[in-house]
Image 1 (cartoon, rainbow, N blue to C red):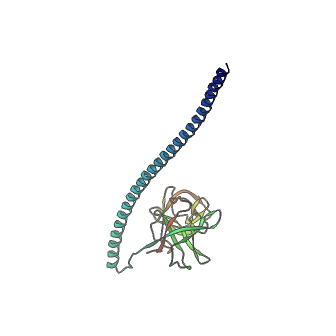
Image 2 (image 1 turned 90 degrees about the vertical axis):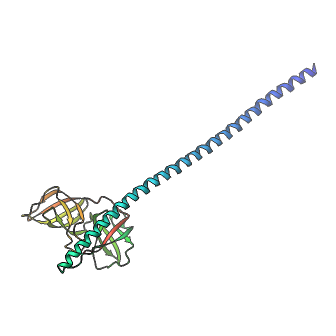
Image 3 (image 1 turned 30 degrees about the horizontal axis):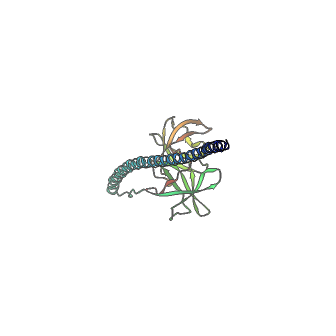
Length: 251
């Protein structure tokens, strides 16, 4: 009888141990499985991200190649045009037409919270006594002046950004002034007709820009006491461009 009781206790102990070990094994197996799945998912996501980044870069490279090809085409046509123009000018004993620009980079804001003023770098031959025109993506962007001996960019929505322009096909002259909302052209004689939708270009008469750089379109004409003012929606939309071109020679 005693032997049967001991055998019964031994069997119950085995069963209990089996259940405990089974749960431990199950827990370890589950943890291991979760770790493996987690590693797999992380690896899969990493591969997915790498592939996505690769294709994104490939797409961007292709886009840049197309833009570069178009820029090369434009540069070739402009060089040809400039050569033909200079030939005509030489025949008439006129001055050679040779406008030049220089690429500069935005560095830091002059005042925190004022995004229309920032210092630029990459302009080693900066002349502190001169005002330069700024161009971004083929459109006027503002002017470059000096502050404490450093080149300071004033975007064309800054009140101190002022340059000469022509309005429309009749080339009505005016002075473009920066405003918080864009550009306003002031001192337009009242006997000249300015219309909404007229395109505005730099005139080059101020020695800041060369002529023909697009500025924007007239959206409103305001009658003042003795002249007209025209509100212009600028083509240049960027708040703070990373790179701009400085007009180093206007003609």
